[in-house]
Amino acid sequence: MPKYRYEIAVFFCVLLSLGRTGCGGKTSTFVRYEFPSADIPLDNEVFAAPKGRNAPQQVHITQGDYDGKGVIISWVTQDEAGPSNLQYGTLEKKYAFSAEGTVTNYTFYNYTSGYIHHCLVDGLEYDTKYYYKIGVDDSAREFWFQTPPRIDPDASYTFGIIGDLGQTFNSLSTLEHYMHSEGQTVLFVGDLSYADRYKYDNIGVRWDSWGQLVERSAAYQPWIWSAGNHEIEYMPDIGEVTPFKSYLHRFPTPHMASNSTNPLWYAVRRASAHIIVLSSYSSFLKYTPQWSWLQEELKKVNRQKTPWLIVVMHVPLYSSNQVHYMEGESMRTVFESCFVRSRVDFVFAGHVHAHERSYRISNIYYNVSSGDRYPVPERSAPVYFTVGDGGNQEGLAGRFWDPQPEYSAFREASYGHSTLEIRNRTHAYYHWHRNDDGTKVLADSVIFFNQYWASNLRRRRHSP
Image (cartoon, rainbow, N blue to C red):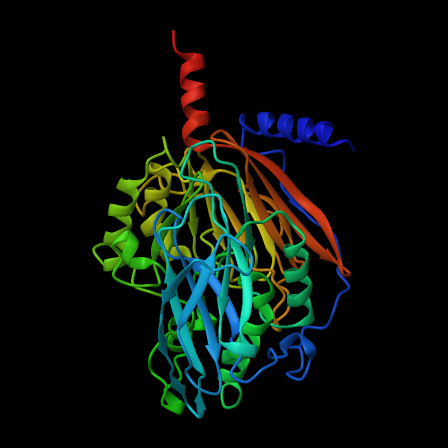
């Protein structure tokens, strides 16, 4: 089908949906036949360390400031600490600038990590390709990244959404399919390595192998991190009682740039999007630090500059899957009214190993004494996505409740990834790509109107 006909068809579907909640809920009947849900053996070439003594490995970058003019570059050296500085510039193999980082390591049960380096590179120019070099002599390695366009309501940008990835051959398939998309930055919705499943052996080793696996993408574009339950690693029976120990040592976030007191929740602005990352496994009730921070961050959102308001978390607030059913209910009762009041566009979550998309609905009118008992259509509500289908060893969550609830627009238990293509201040394209026996297949696609600008257009059209 020609692209313009496809877009027109989806456009009319969206128009029809404005009168109710959507074009009709759909449960996909697709049955997948893919790789087994087992981790890739540690001696597989996908985990191979780079050549050279003490060569930097597990390289990944994330946004390093509030507005996208900085990155934090992280890597690991195994033999010795070595230098934590890097060189960078706008010309390949010609590095006009340098930055100095920090180095740390940690122990977990009977594992001692390599030397973990984090280096903030800030003051960058927008919409510019930078090359960077880490390591020394014959072990040095070179990479590149592209900074986003300046903050602007009509800045176009494409985000990838990946969650619950793990390190199976299905995980590799998802990652390789994403790398052939137009995605420029990953919004990662939690559950990274699944190393915690190796409780008494190889927990740290499986963190190292996962870092090697994702380097092929994460060294070249930012991955915006959020933590899931598999990052907690609370194991008092082996003497490990510090939650998120491995995760926090390995994956820094720019939380202080948004006045957050904890790296597990923070916010960044990128192109035309304001992205808020929340922690499903930290205190979130009223008056707690995370709740208080969110109230202040929502006040800072300027839809004139960043019209697209996106929330990232791990546990879905709405899901019609029987696995982890209603685990996000307590967080929903606390945060949903904030999301509706602020006209959040999208909430991306993982945890459930399937894909699901909701209509714009809310349940904020219900209380124990009166009000609607069920989710109802709500123009100001976000669309809720579950993208926990990265490919980990636990397999898929194929048990959906039947009949499909009215709030659920599309659902399917297959591995894959999503992309959100922001076109301008008014429209964005969402695509979910299924891993169909090794082939990337477009299985769900919708055009969305921006909550702020679309509502303003409707008011102007209906004003006298």
